[in-house]
Length: 195
Image 1 (tube, one colour):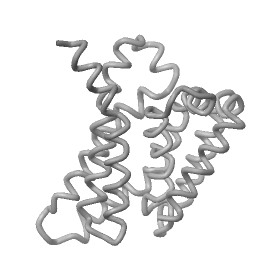
Image 2 (cartoon, helix red, strand yellow):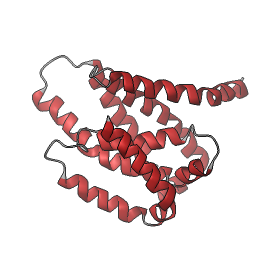
Image 3 (tube, one colour):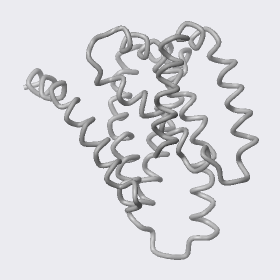
Image 4 (cartoon, rainbow, N blue to C red):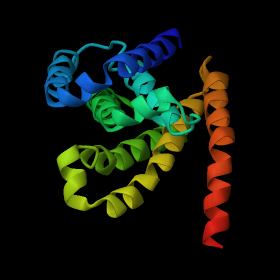
């Protein structure tokens, strides 16, 4: 859990101070992280086990529930870039997960596996449309509508982790509970507006 929290803190600090550079040089960053991922595909490590990508996605996730402030503004300016980087870093975990299911896992398909598969399926359109040039072609309204399923992605990832029932289960429950608590007022407003 220390790795996940440390990753989130580092990503937040770098995004706060270097948001302009992250946005400007995003394609170089994507290429750099892509190369790193290719080098880490074979052996189990903190990236392929999902710790680093999860820590990155936590920043993307919680940026949406922060109060209006300088940190929220700067995180929002690179939120799409962080989502793309998180998706790139998740590739070794997804491939390792699928390879394990196809080659080594002989038991029944447990529910946490299903949430893992669901997370990957949902992430694909979210990841593709996080690229600026794709978003511009879609138009903001269509992009915004599609990205409402990000909430389902966050939920499926956390349920995937919670249902594994390891020693970190209660921390994942806390992360999900705090997020829902902070996001609830916005959801209530949306529901009332629709009614």
